Amino acid sequence: MSNNDPVGYAAELGQRLLDKGWMFACAESCTGGLLAAAMTDIPGSSQWFDRGFVTYSNAAKVEQLLVNEDTLERFGAVSEETAMEMAAGVLTAAAPAHLAISTTGVAGPDGGTPGKPVGMVCFGFAQRASQGIVTRAMTKIFEGNRQQIRNAAVTFALTTAASFIERR
Image (tube, rainbow, N blue to C red; front, side, top):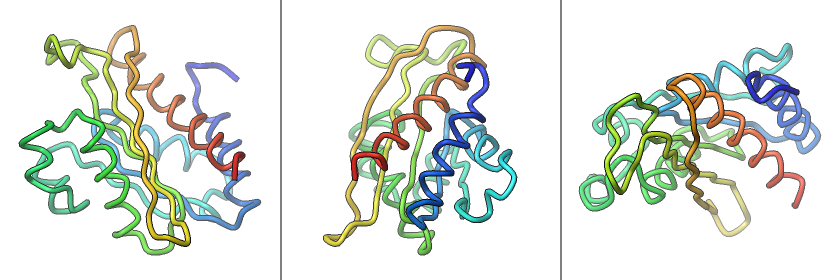
């Protein structure tokens, strides 16, 4: 599988979801729908893909995903705190989903700051569990132009989510 083509990784994640009988949903900011597109490029993905949100603005994150305005104020849109709230919000909005991924970052070519450089992407992962919704977050910094950063973010999100399913 090529790092430039995340569809193969989406197929692998889709098979793991199907094997578990799980549904998947996502919330994207910096990837702008590329994650949902990779997932739905797979024939038969309706068996395991429920929905995707593209919440580029802070207002959309608050309205659609129930991200707390205080979280955005204190940590910013590009933060692990926001990414976790986005992922948890997906599972709240998408009742049939068992696993959710969120992406929020600085894809460039501008917009970076010393603390949040171009290429920085925060990922939220949320999963339904017996004790409720369990979330975790990760941050990665990717190199390249805007498209390379966005594609790398999608590939990382897919492979990381697949590894979480494998561990359970």
